[in-house]
Image: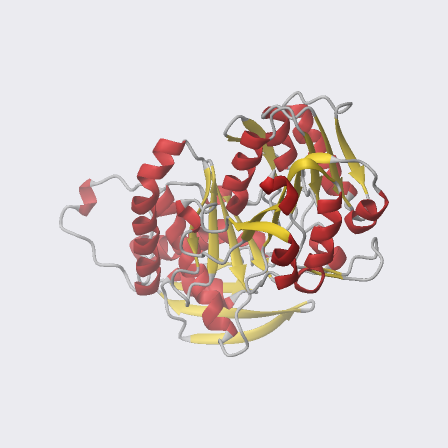
Amino acid sequence: MITNPPYGERLGELPALVPLYASLGERMKRHFGGWTLAMFTGNPDLGHRLGLRAHRQYAFRNGQLECKLLMIDVTMRERAADEDSVVEDARSQPALSEGGQMFANRLKKNQKALARWLKQSNTTCYRLYDADMPEYALAIDIYGRHVHVQEYTPPKSVDASQAQRRLMDALAAIPGVLGCSPNDIHIKQRTRQAGKAQYTRQDTSGQRIEMQEGDAKLWVNLKDYLDTGLFLDHRPVRKLLAREAEGKRFLNLFCYTATASVHAALGGASESISVDMSNTYLDWGRENFKLNGINEKRHQLVRGDCLKWLERSREQFDLIFMDPPTFSNSKKMEGTLDIQRDHARLIDLAVASLAPGGTLIFSNNHRRFVLDDSVSEHLVVENLSRKLLDPDFKRRPDIHHVYRIRRVSDVKG
């Protein structure tokens, strides 16, 4: 038998190809014992999913792509005594490797730990796994029936082919544990993003999925960008803003897809302004507003450099949410933004835009962030970081830092 199956040149194609290769190997062992399989592939790591050992390999090139022709003598798989009477299920999952089974067990353990909270909170978008096992360096998020997998780039000390095999193990385990189709698994590689790279399209599917979070309906895109349009760790922060926004003027800085603005508007904010440099994300925010019937005359989306916008603004707000990136060198802004270096100035500018009695909610995702002492010296600061972590992120308490900041005079008053 000669076959030239898909290679999976793009990372996003792997979820469907891992079970394809595994099923091919299983069918060969079941029905073609004694045959010779000749497989031509540009991805030898996928070839390992067959569960069959090649007795000979030939190296070839298909254009610029390095390929191999794997020659495999197929041994008939031994069948259980009653197996002949059982109709073969085309959807059955081939046996997992030892590592794949360990990974599957961890997913099941996490599912069980979160089950009660998920039911009580009616949460459908959550993090199931975040590099709990260091050798499986993945973050796995659930969006309804869809699974979003992010592979952390392995360090140079880790053999690349071994990391690839572990990724294949994980992708083989996920459908069986979560009961999802491989076509509903979306995979990306997570690397440090800076400047324009964080907005760059990775695909052009345009596929949007409507998700529910509390009273809000929000669009997510699991294929086209590195981020999905919804930061799951900030779920409790958005709920806090919704509770505190009633009757208030709300300002959302570095608003991303304006999900916090949606919650604030639905929570009863009288007006809001949401500022971001990216037209892509502002358009996304407009779609979120439309989805929730939010009036853009009272709730504005503004393109601009948040630092410059604050310097020029003379407006005052009762509630401000500011969630800057850890670092940015975007061409759309002057200079660079380093949140550890620049946060004190950003906070002072935001506080200057607070109305009397107003509140600033300041957050960031810099894992090693330390609040500058000068901030606490002239402002009242309450660290809410641990309080605003849902159970799905308890394993990563440094995932974000959140502070409630007010003027001293407002607190004393």
